[in-house]
Amino acid sequence: MGQRRQVVIPREIFETLKLQEGDFVAFSKQANGVLIKPKRLVDPDDTFTSEESALIAKARREMREGKYVTLAQLEHDLAHKRPPRRRKAT
Image (cartoon, rainbow, N blue to C red; front, side):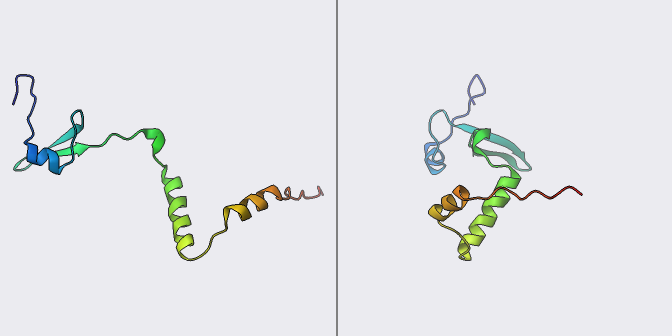
């Protein structure tokens, strides 16, 4: 433990965890000591909402089942999409 509460991680562990200088680590108190884990910072704009994750999972499942259209077909369908029909007022 250094003067400014800095901790030195042994080279073997540093390399095993694939850490690099400047990386962050997370500390958590355990019953028998302290757990140190690499902390990966993620840009919140690069994450999916739970709804988006569910849609991606559904799409992957449908692709595995052979239920998909090509990009060309999708573009064609979107280009030729008919406007929704309006109901007559009664």
